[in-house]
Image 1 (cartoon, rainbow, N blue to C red):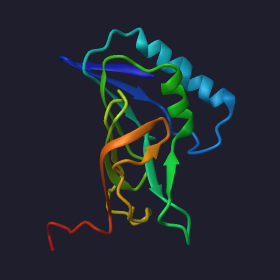
Image 2: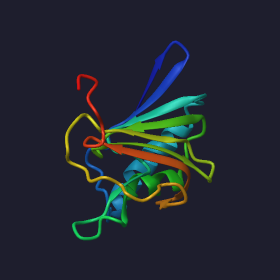
Image 3: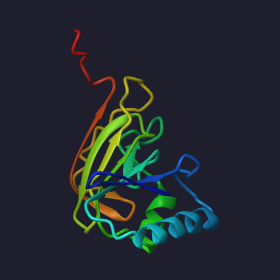
Length: 155
């Protein structure tokens, strides 16, 4: 994990590309926990976490069960639970091919998933995200938009 400072803006850049969405090994969780603990000592103020994979996100269930949500990213959630990083105001990530905006009932930073670059690789989330349990958080307010639902400004 690297800290990048531009003026008064601080960002923690996490290489999470190898984090599995489910069933992490204890070593994977420990690796991210160690990084989060180190970042906690950086005395951050209003920082953003920038990561390939979101800490908290969901996507539609498997074929034939799209109404149920699948939670993404259990190793990062486990690491945050063990070593939350003080001074983080926002988590921004990609990975899931949709847009998600999530705030939580727990004292967790909001999560923005910006993976809707126009590809149709994610299925529409048809249930409300508000009130859903996503890993270690319960969504206070949430919304999702997939690539198919978007209209091009050129249309």
